[in-house]
Length: 289
Image 1 (cartoon, rainbow, N blue to C red):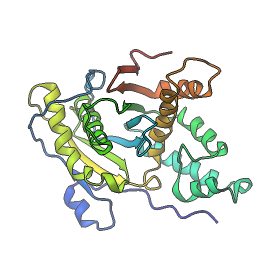
Image 2 (cartoon, helix red, strand yellow; image 1 turned 90 degrees about the vertical axis):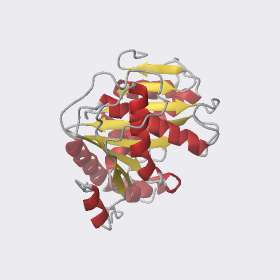
Image 3 (cartoon, rainbow, N blue to C red; image 1 turned 180 degrees about the horizontal axis):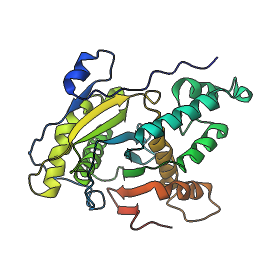
């Protein structure tokens, strides 16, 4: 008997539609506000090569919460025309792996059945096939991190998370400023629910401040969802875990170190890996390997 999985999200096309669907996650869309604030991650990697065409879908999550010994990371995965196909394939893999009788009774497997993929908890029999699937998908990842030693992002962990969410999303608004809309899915987190309302205007102001002039930016929709509602969020979860472990290992370059090999496995997916304290660590233009 498989665990109960909540239905996949169907995104409303307007805020009014979202408010009418009482069972849908809360969402909000930014207008084309032109207020300015200061900020930015200090690199033009994200905002270069402005992308056009239709709606861009983003999956965002954070890592290292309430764990001071680990780097605090905010990451995003962007998918384009392939987003529906990616979600379908991740769901299909979940259904197929959930049927494995050899893992029945293993607590991490039962968690996986009920809650979907989770990088830090999935057994090898689950994480291995998921990493193989990632190799066959088309997406880009962007990550901002802090070792918590700077006051630039705020004094508390919550302030730091808010700063990194606003900064990363602001830069992605610039990168995709020729698109009509960005739909951003953030993993459900009670302590960050206020971001649903605050991210669109704050990210927009931060983007315009970095650009230095007022321009139209995409309509921004922010939605909180569980991993079972939007299983593609597991992609950024897996990437952040590999990055966190590698950073915690002092960015080792020893091939005998498993954390380094795990980072090398996900690095090709990373368009930007940026540290608030140390600047650009890796990008598609300047990869480590």
